Length: 320
Image (cartoon, rainbow, N blue to C red; front, side):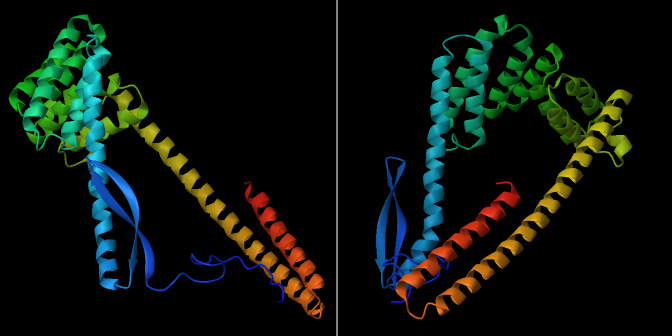
């Protein structure tokens, strides 16, 4: 048999160079045991409609399995935080409340309402124990207390606590909650002062920009000037400079990406040309062998080395 030059193609599963048997495929089947998903391989033969039905069902099975796993992980986080909250520190109290809040947001208590209320009430008890020694963190803990009340459905009590928290000291959690509430009430006279006190206490530029965007939206103003009426001249200057800087960085990154794509396309074309030359030279080499197997094998080796060189040069050009 004549030796073949290398052509890089992917063969279907089965014997080398042969396609897999028609009408057969391996599908992952999901078996739900005790809330944990396990995968088994099921061979389906001969029935296209059955195969199509299973293919349609697989994404739903994956979603259900992942959903159960995520719920279990979140509730486990609640239990872990609860155990660690035996130490009445501000960090432990905040972690417990945060874990309960994430479970509420994800809907984990939708069918476990009593459990959710119990966890929220317990988190409030832990927060109350931590507040007296929390120092500068006390306003934030009170804001988490308000969040637990809101999650448990006690809206009026929750917003009274958000106000108490913000009066103790401006903080991100209470500030965001109050801005949204005042925006829904169309009270720009209240949105503005909260925003003006909240933005300066945020720790990084991303948080500040996100808060400013939220404030501008909840001012419900018609013009940019109206949206930004609460901002000090210094904050307006910083805001404009930071946006300009980020826009410039984005433009530079986009230009660099376009240049990189052009370079990659050029390298790919060069490699294709290089590979075509390897093939042409390989075929020419084999044609001169006149059915000499040893000669043809040498031609194949030369072809392989040529293709490897093409790939190596392409990788070097791309800096990989």
